[in-house]
Amino acid sequence: MKTIAAFFVLFSSLQAVGCYTGARFNLVAPNLDYPVSMTEAVHDHELKVRSFDDYDELSRFTLTFTGWSVGFPLSPNPQKDISDRLNAIVKEKNGDGIVGLTITVGNNSINGVTMALKGISAVTFAASLLILSGNDQSDGLILAGASLACLLLLPTAGEFTISGTVVKFRNSVPGP
Amino acid sequence: MRIDVQKPIYFGNLPGDLRQDSSRVEYINTVSASTSHVKESPSLGSSRNVGIIIGGREERSGDVYFSLEDALEGDAARFIANVSVSAKVETYVPFWTVFAQFIFTGILGAAHSSAMPDATAETIDFHGTIYRIKLVQQ
Image 1 (cartoon, helix red, strand yellow):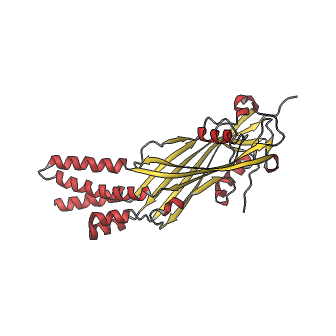
Image 2 (cartoon, rainbow over the protein chains, first blue to last red):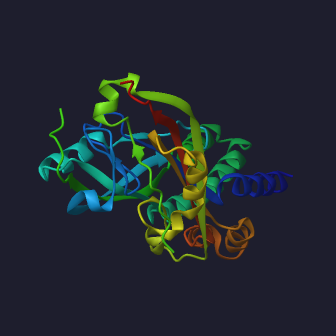
Image 3 (cartoon, rainbow over the protein chains, first blue to last red):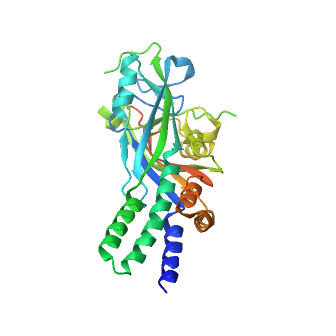
């Protein structure tokens, strides 16, 4: 009977948590000192829309970073503020803003490791329930707690790449 | 094919001049768009190269761009600001693969099959606010 129960728990555990992992991230920039446009168009200081022929492209840049989260679906989304990094890039090049901002997100290979550990944790959790039903309840409790914590708190990651072009307006009055 | 949007779409806050004088802009509406990418049978470690792009000059951003073009259409003074992005990455392994590996090869087999994802997916949700620049009264 215990074997059947353990088999059922193992089956359910694997199905519930062993085959999926994911993470969510919020990318924001609420404190930019310069215009950062995702298109080629950008307003100058006089609020005229400038495009290709109206600015000089000073340099292209690429930022990469890893966003970390936990695999538990109900966990809050980590928020990443990139205002300071974008401000520093424009300031360093003495530009007026950024055009063509591109955001790329991809899976990280750490998520494969997380999947493997979740699979092991699910099996361990099922085994611990079997132990709990026997005489040695303290060991089973520790094992169940540890494996459940692993299932809920294992890290997941996403790779962000942000690129764009720093530009300087031609024939423009200086900004404030 | 290159998709041009001839109006600004500002990541983050309104540009400095407009932020300092918000009476120059008129709120129109909010706009949201979403795009996702699924890759089947990625090998472990190669998933780093899978991604989706919004912004810039890339064709792959088309779905989002078409939504934004609609939002901006018909008014030269319109633009989008306060853009933020929510990104989601997901990895899937078929349950039966893991289960069969566990039956035949034990925990390590299950772990190995878990680490070889059947599919990875990335989703980006785009959120922004549509504004228009008010005409200055002479």
